[in-house]
Amino acid sequence: MFFRKLFVLVISILFIFINACSDSEKENNLVDLHTLANQDIISISFPIELNESILSINSEFYFVLQGVKSNNIDTTIINNDVIWSLSDNAISTIDQTGYFSAGNSAELITLTAKFGPLVETFEIKVSDAKFDEVVQLNEQDLSINMCQSKNIKPVARYIDSNGINEIRLVDSNIINTIVWLIRNQEDNSTSQRAHISTENNQANLHTLAAGNIIIQAQALSVFSNTEKTSADFNQNVSNTLNSIKICNNDNTDLDTCNVTSANVEKDKSISLITIGNYQAEDGSNFNQNISQNSKWGIDNATNASVTFSSDFQRVDVNGLTESTSAVLTTACGTISQSLSSIDITQGVVLSSQVSCDAGIDCLDASSSITIDKLGVSSFTVTANDIDLTDNTSETLSSRPDEITLKVIANFTNSTSRLITTDDELVYSITAGDGDVIEEITGSSGVFTVLRNGTANIKLDYRTETFTVFLVIP
Image (tube, rainbow, N blue to C red; front, side):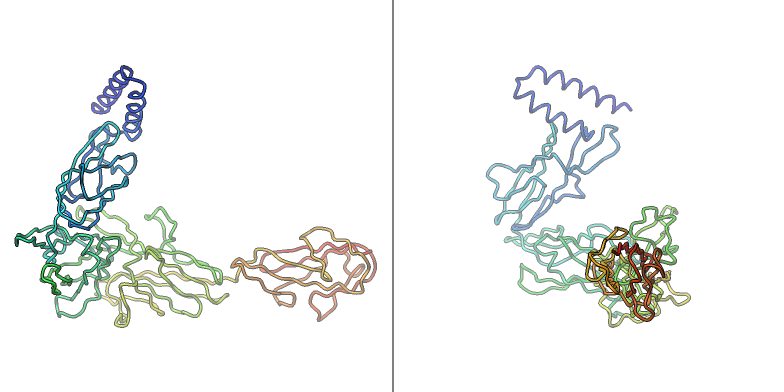
């Protein structure tokens, strides 16, 4: 409360100061003041854990500015209204999103960030030291549970022209070139417990099962121009998973969501996720989307299929054969089924159910999937080649001997099909039956005209209806 009152007082004093300035100064200062007050920020800084002070030539990096709220406790990353600049004569560049592009030669730079009236600086060394090899998996000890993903920041040795070592984070020039090798500690076999992916200059460790693993980084040493493989990095994948369940992708309440059965139309899809409930170090429990690192299976790949979304944060269950069913299963841990032919980096989906053996670090869940008939969005109907509108009177120009209907169903997957003789289509004469018209037995959609008058024919197909309203002269 004290800091908030102090914040208000400072803002008030600034308003008084602004009134004493020239018109142009007033305008600029008011903009700065509005920027500050709008986001409730009292101070700014470059958090060390999110920024790098030494960067390689020709590399890139996004700098992060952090603000302290007026309660002097809460912090927030400032993404808007920051003015970024570098020292005069800097070869490197920075844009107004904080994206830094290092120049092609070594230099020392002062980075300046201005947020409203607040200004903060950060010293950067652009180094021409060359990458040699990865010496540490992550800049800090890493704790990870099975079926989780965590960003890792590998540390490498760089060597300059004088033979002096620089131990620092792997830069954007190298991170995407590293080949990661992972083995099981107990037998030195290639591990399917984890893999590492690299995207947008970020490396992420993904774990699929509990156990002890060995990770190595293999990359070309720019310093020696030879391929180097790092020392063994021992990593434990723990298991404090309490339970897993299947939920809809759009569920926001992860505590109560649970999908044990679901329906999907033929040629349509539903999006589902795996939720894992973990025990934290302090004894509390928390829920997390673990879809990417779960194994998925479907017991009947003819009736339904399962595919990962492009970001691996959900699976899409696609209905293939209408009026059938399938069982969707998901598991976290070492499953009973073999993964020897599966590329785990692309997600694990089997054309059979996944299951867990007793006594193994593994939990599973399932949901029954019913594949419904394809829905109908509308009908296209003609009578003797005359286009009709649902429940709208159409007066014929002359009296025909017969009325022949042609019915096309337009489905929810944007396809259409002629259904005039489909067994599911039911014709019912609701006005003029036996008096104005009568249905010809064995000829679906064909009616004999008996005399002039009004005839109504109701069409029922897959819960949708269309009423033909004809006036016969």
